[in-house]
Image (cartoon, rainbow, N blue to C red; front, side, top):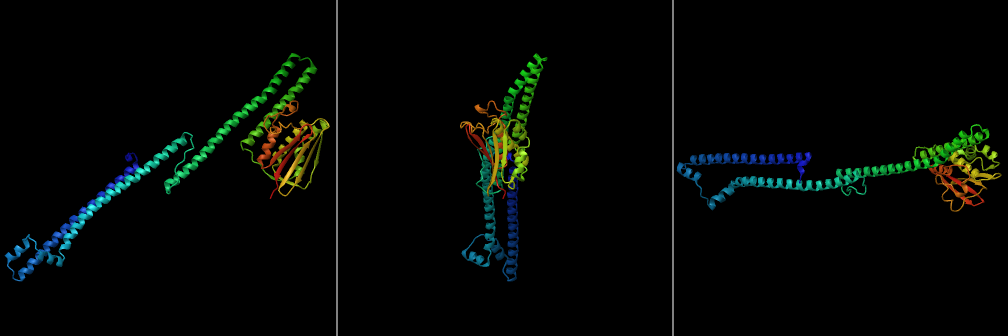
Length: 399
């Protein structure tokens, strides 16, 4: 056992050694003092006996013979026992026994300490292995938590820290994947308008004196730039929503106010395309939401309806307030959505084969869903091909 590598354990063992030596020194000192005291007691006792016998007229030879006699008789032992002299000899033996007992207890103390340190070192080695796993990014191992005491409380805290690190690592990995996917999506989507811009610019350069050609392709350049701007703005908004950097400021608003705010820039387009937008609902109904972002979501749904509705078509917006839910319906009588496409319309850049010639960059519905979901709402869709589409936006009623 390499206990000596630990400075604290070395200090503890040194303390045990010094403490044990002090116990033995005190014990031996006590025995020496007791022996000295016993000798002095015997000498004083012998003086008292000799003095008493001399006063009684006993001869000095008899007294000297009695004091120096080494033989023991049963009568003498009985007399000393009666006088309590034997207890003094027993007390000396008790001190020797105490010394031996102290030595044995000290040895047991060291053995117990050794066993304790051995078990504790095994526990620390186990903890070290688990921590090495954490360092290597393996969070499947866990420190023992089935005991009591400060060490196990520390292990619990370390396990909690490992869980936090694992969650952070997973978040970072997801962020890397998200960033890679976002960059890939933007690069892919920008290729087409950039290629178109380059082609339009070459055509204008080849025919600088052809006014009609210059006007025609200048308009196309403007459309391509507008498409790129819409794409970049939509991607920035979706990225902010996905990274959680958007904090929705939800307040109570009239639903009619929310709808009018959503359509503020769409009525002109609808009139230009000879499409009608109608609104129907109780003006007193309230909804708890973020006005700016929710208007963005509903506006994107209406834009999608305009994109897929032919001239003369209609978009109808209505809402209904119940005890638990507020629902907003956005319906159109356009082309509808094919059954094989309806489960993919909220994916980014998804465009069905029936939407090739329509406006948009394929991010409006994805952005709308992210906004509604981020506020705890739900967005769903119902559609039949060539019969129109209905989007339903639902919010929980404020308690």
